Length: 114
Image 1: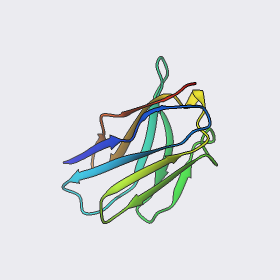
Image 2: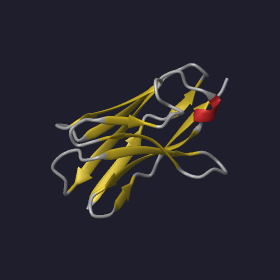
Image 3: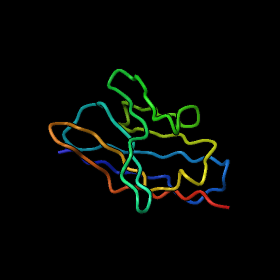
Image 4: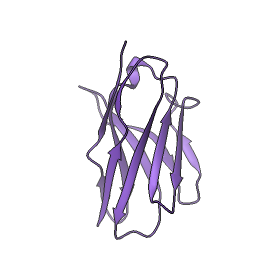
């Protein structure tokens, strides 16, 4: 079993920054391929970014150049640094890992508004 807990969401003005954290616990020894997804009201959940076991990063076109995914293997944490936030980034953000099954956190709300 793997547990994922997100934190760091909040209200921020357009152009501002937030750093989301995903804390990983359970029967897992390291940070394997981990993703961030988001879901806005009335929209489908969409993929945002991924980081592989080796540290390779990938991003959705909508966030590339503004968001940065990183991880701390020792602390078993994954981060999403979000800069240049826009109103259309408003969503509930979820951490996801596949380890023999899909594991999701409960989400953390990000609201971008003036």
